[in-house]
Length: 530
Image (cartoon, rainbow, N blue to C red; front, side, top):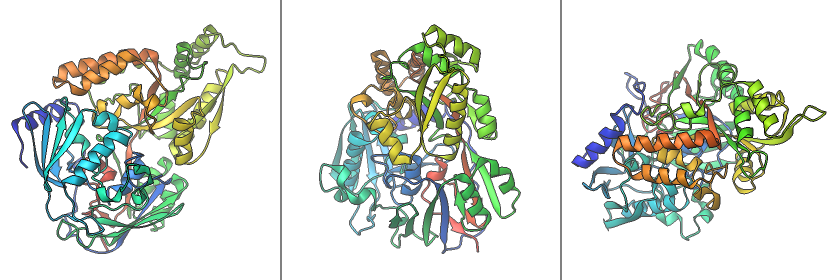
């Protein structure tokens, strides 16, 4: 690909400075791929949309990436590869990204892909995307001098921009499928039209999403599969059984307790990845509008009541890792766990609550809290553990159950919770993935997974703004360390565990993982061995 000196420097600074861990090489089968067959996948829980414009949940992107594509993707070493952009360059001042677009690409409805679609998509994500208002904050325009050239114009340097342009994070959408300015009314969210290897066929709510092969895909000879069907089940045990019985070829949601048993089956393979693109974690959030939780000592007390090691061992069977800072440990130059040191100490927690004026009443209860949790097997189990752990220090917890749509409405729209167990993708850069957890803009501009705590600290906002445009990595690291020093004390939220990405598959399913974001590849090269 065409790379300017500026481009090379940016990539080297981001990916060559020890910020990301070494990743497993994506081993490809030595056998000759065979065409045909339907890949049957199992997912726990159902997405709210099939386009990650309004909801960036992982459940959406693992399906959407088979239909929609980005300008680039990344290999296992975080090297960029062309997709809808064939080459790109960055101006010396870092304010203009010029993308040369792939010619001859058609949308699934037969219309031609062009630079107008790129312009529409980036500006739409800037306006409405849960992360877009931060990621694309410095984008002032997308120039389209011709149908095959798109120039992203920035008001300030954005050193992480290229990393945000994958199909899972910022897919290119067909502008003609959004006929009005109210993008929420488009049918594209439930029956998307893309340029990818698979065409949307059917979404039977509560049951499955069915995709079929794109017969005119721009990559000659691909995809190998005739289609992909993702069926929704209620729990990880059901996913494990579907694999064992041969009903399914693939699941990312098997029950962790089943992993050892599945690995003993010669017809199955189970791999555990560190997803350095998403950096998923369980995050614990406080609703700071609750007058009890507005007291810092109460938040500190509840943090001391949580035993992360127990969660890792008993709920994740050792597959997860304890965490504390919301900035992932894989960003070794940026991460600082020290300000978040709230070791498991129920006695300390009780003393803090007594000191805050919340002594136990005659029934042994200090106060009650409503706990919301992101739907999912391990989240429910962690929620149940938290209810027990907080109960031991005199805090009654009522667990609020519901599907993903109910959860999002409850937490972000209705504010009907007190504490929240969330699943957050901390992403490929703290500006893109972590800033939204603290960004005061999220209080007035409500979006899923953005500042559920309603934390408002002008100094933290200022530091994040500075880090977003800083091209000197040492200075950028300093900004992030200062942020952690502040929020580690304020504690509007904190990480509990860093989550693994599990890929359980039939021995028939080949070439499943081909990009750094693991399960959010396009499946163009996936094939089934007879």
